[in-house]
Image (cartoon, rainbow, N blue to C red):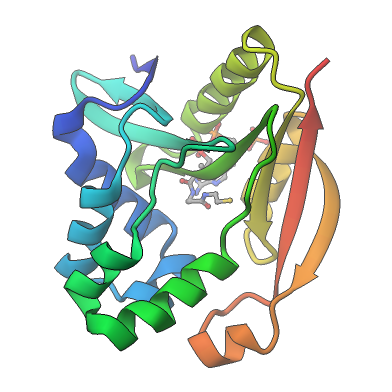
Length: 195
Ligand SMILES: CC(C)(COP(=O)(O)OP(=O)(O)OC[C@H]1O[C@@H](n2cnc3c(N)ncnc32)[C@H](O)[C@@H]1OP(=O)(O)O)[C@@H](O)C(=O)NCCC(=O)NCCS
């Protein structure tokens, strides 16, 4: 049986970083590649308090990364990027990562990302993580939860709709997708008003 907790034990930052890079590879692999540099970059930039995690016997099953007006879960700085990719690499990758980012306003909680390990999918872990976030939003008086999903991720979109998120906007990312090598064409912005 798994449990959901606020935050991530810091010794699991490496696992969280690997999980994000593999589960969200459609977004990240064309920008950062799939090698240890990307894992190190994410690991070093993780803010462990800015997420909810699903654990089973100290094993990480899933992470829901949360972004507020002034805090992210994954936030590689230009300095971090240039250590791994050099100055020009950092410029290009920084611009591409920026295209995937949303800047939440005050009283808005943004789902920066959610990922469940392959072997635990379809067992309710993602649902429980999102329900915990909804409870958190209510108790902390946030007005809405927002997220972005890529147009090719139909199952995630269905999950969000089932939990009460509504589509607000479709944003085409052409020609950036062709230049960067993304296989998706648009991002879909969704929100849930907290009543
Ligand atoms: C999307 C994701 C977080 C859902 O987590 P999960 O633990 O599998 O979700 P749940 O078990 O609560 O299932 C929720 C629904 O998603 C469906 N689902 C989505 N992706 C699935 C997958 N890869 N395998 C099995 N079921 C999946 C389930 O069938 C279920 O639908 P239902 O409740 O109508 O039967 C998880 O599949 C995942 O990590 N996917 C890769 C990363 C990703 O796409 N993240 C979202 C980016 S916006």
